[in-house]
Image (cartoon, rainbow, N blue to C red; front, side):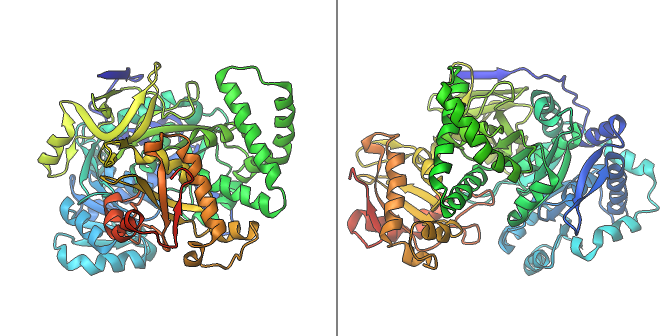
Length: 611
């Protein structure tokens, strides 16, 4: 087996728990701004470290007064906002265990998370969240407290805990040691019932302490590091960054409404961002289509090509030709500076995870002055297992192992991880726990490869490998990721298991479709259903597929595709909360469309030029 390990940079402390991270931050910088809250006029109101700590203790007292005992499980269904992290730390100070629920979860998912975890209380944000919980409340007899943030229940809890002594909260917060459960996070459930991942205090503490040193250029900016969180805090990725930010003293703002993201970025002016590749693709695609609409599409594409060439030359250490230097300087004034300004003007780094970004976009943003640090991890690894570093980065990879983490490849190419980030077990599921561990090594189910320096590249998912009738093994991600980068494309699902050739189901991006149609002389009011048979749309999708096919052998290439007259969304049951496709569900729901590509040729079907 090939194995790479990175030694820890901070000595482990098995007695420490997550509350220590905030207490240490209060001691270090009590008056620094730790959070910024959005104001009605579009500005930001500061919350200092001392103020945050006081609010955490006050809410912890309220939870104690309400009867929450150390070790109790409490559900939280809330979008990304300041109160999420406030509640998170208050639970830890009260000795309790938070069970996050995605704000988009269905009543059945709410019932499963709360029932399986044994939660005795739940905090909901909105009336809509309450309605979904209320539908299944009769099936959850253990739930004795229900609080709603939008009804002011957090303030009521604080008021009710006024008589709880400080010593009681200090006692409670010191009960847990590193090996104790810190949170119970349910996997997003792309297959089967979600499993509860038991993450320990050490998972958060050791990973945060080591990551802060490894990523010091990002989170310890001498001018003041800051980030605007917009991906859901219920997911371990944003949750870990929230905890890391408290530890490192990063100023954090929140904006859950992605439609308000650009105005918020402009006013908040973060120094680093946390996002999934789809966000970076959207920013690029929207910018390109805006340029196209203004008659400057050729300029934008030339600028993009120059940016990629410039970054590629820099990374390889090659001398940059004089002509490229001149073009780059010109495009920096005309194009790149405007994109930087749109993101607030101060972004130096962006941490990307959950799916491959692709080298072209990595190089494009690098030339804007934004280093995208791609990383890799799962809920079971408390988010990151590997990540590119500011001082040690390779575009197209997900970086080396974080300090305190080891990564190896099994004989079949499966990525396995051990270290301070690996979860303890699946909640009440010893069979699943045993099946996913090989000794201390967690078997991720993902496939990868290492370069000589230990930089990991993700190549696919073990269970998603397609074996054609001819015996060819095909990793869908290698085809899906580049196609999905096209502005017209919403989702791509490559199919062909036990079939004579590879095909693909395609959906169109409903936001980009009218813009693209208008820019290409087509009716911008065209419905998605009409667009599935539009010759110009079919030709554009074909171009995206042909470009992806150039990266694989003929036997692995997509030979036919069907554009579905619908969207694949979380609400439709086809995507997880982190926007990963539920492949098995899609294969079942669209079985007829798949079969038609092998037995017939409907009007919405396209054919590859190599078919």
